[in-house]
Amino acid sequence: MSWAVEEWKEGLSPRVLQKIHELESQVDKLKKERQQRQYQLETLEAALQKQKQKVENEKNESAILKRENQSLMELCDNLEKAKQKISHDLQVKESQVNIQSGQLNSCKKDVERLEQELKR
Image (cartoon, rainbow, N blue to C red):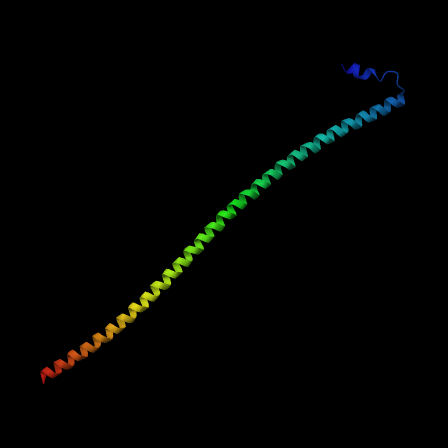
């Protein structure tokens, strides 16, 4: 079948045939170049899609981490409030213990005084 393709060239001058050959070579070269560029384009598109997916995954992970961070901050705030309440309660109880200790000491002195009076 290639002879039919070449048949139309019969009778053409060598100069025209040379030009046709050059043009055919240039067409082949351009086809190969186009194929290479198409392959490069497909490769770049695949890499772009991969990067887009990676960015999307990182955005999702970032959102998850932000939510987790917010939750942890709230937990820390709650723990800090609980710590302050416990600290306050402890101070109140220590104050009560000090008052009762003072009362106990006062009662002991009263008992000792009363015992001394009884001995007299």
